[in-house]
Length: 181
Image (tube, rainbow, N blue to C red; front, top):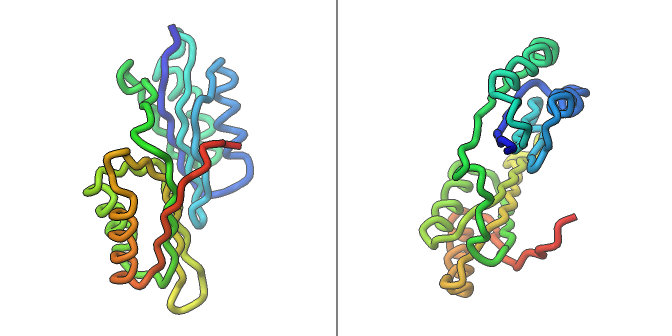
C-alpha cells in the first residue's frame, strides 16, 4: 500500500530548488500528486503532496533531503498523512474566482477571508501581489473559492462589494472555469 506525505521546502530563491527537491523524490520512487511552488519576494516556497512505496519512511525522506538542505540552505519539513488526511476532499460547492484590486493597506486579506468564512465559502487558493516603488502601493489578490449551493450569490456579491468600498478596493466575483490546464 502506498503511503502519502506532505513536504514543504523553503529557502532563498535560486536555480535548482525545484530540480533538487523533485530529484530526491524521484530517486526514492515517490510520485508527486499535488503541488504549489512559488517565489515570494526573494524566497522560494514549495508544498507537495506525494505518495511512495511502503518501504519509504519519514526518516528515509528526511535523510534523503539532508544533503540538499545543506547545499541549497533549505528548510524541509516532512509530515506523514493519515488515511483520513490523505483523502482528497470533495468539492464543497461551485468554483468561483474573486479578484481584489486597490491601494494596499493592512487587513485586506483578513477582512475578505473573514467575510467568506462567515458566509460558509471555502477558500481553496490565494495569491497576493503588492506593487513595488509606487506610493501608495497597489495590491492585487486572487482567490479561488468554493461557494456552497445554499449561499445566495447576489447577497455574497453585495457583501463583498460593500466590504471593498469600506477598504477602498474593487472586489469582483465570477464563476471559475473548472477546466485546468
